[in-house]
Amino acid sequence: GDSVTQKEGLVTLTEGLPVMLNCTYQTIYSNAFLFWYVHYLNESPRLLLKSSTDNKRTEHQGFHATLHKSSSSFHLQKSSAQLSDSALYYCALSESNYQLIWGSGTKLIIKP
Amino acid sequence: DTTVKQNPRYKLARVGKPVNLICSQTMNHDTMYWYQKKPNQAPKLLLFYYDKILNREADTFEKFQSSRPNNSFCSLYIGSAGLEYSAMYLCASSREDTLEQYFGPGTRLTVL
Image (tube, rainbow over all chains, first blue to last red; front, side):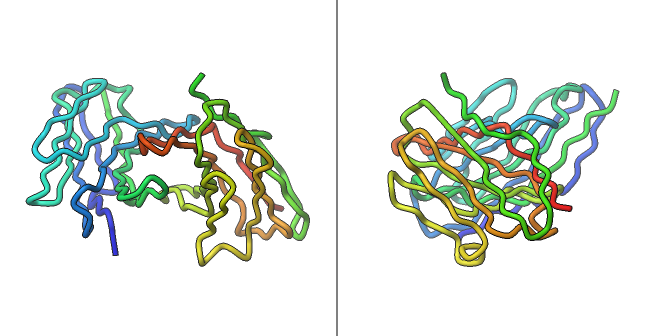
């Protein structure tokens, strides 16, 4: 079945360093959508990035990701981490308009 | 207004007692979801309504009930709460053509 893998459960970085959170997926659907959701403490999860187009970079709030169907990846990146980026990040997959298949999440901690 | 509202924000329940959680949205979204979220785990889909059609996950369908009296409201009902039901319950909604889910602030349920 479809699945999403986020191999890092916890990433700790110093402010100013680049961020890269890994996301790989498995699906039989060629038109699946990949998402990154961010979940800040005491807030609800919200959409950060979304893509279904191969090799197209999508950007929002300083973060970017490129969907690579050849490697089934959708890694989240940011050039310079900020303290306010500390949160839980979930990669998710949807091949329909109903269900999201979630990765296990990566907790990102940014230290001064 | 792109908000999803949930009531109550915090709920304390006794083991064996019923619990009713409420969610509302005014975006005219056709699909509404209920997730259970526990610390360090990804949101777990419990059920969703597409219009008036209820879909419940196979491993939780006996534990959770739901109703959607109109397009804007959706409830989550637990007939007899157990300690394992203590979690954050997130409601979300989405529109058929965008796949993006908008999340409410959640209801933190504590069962004692």
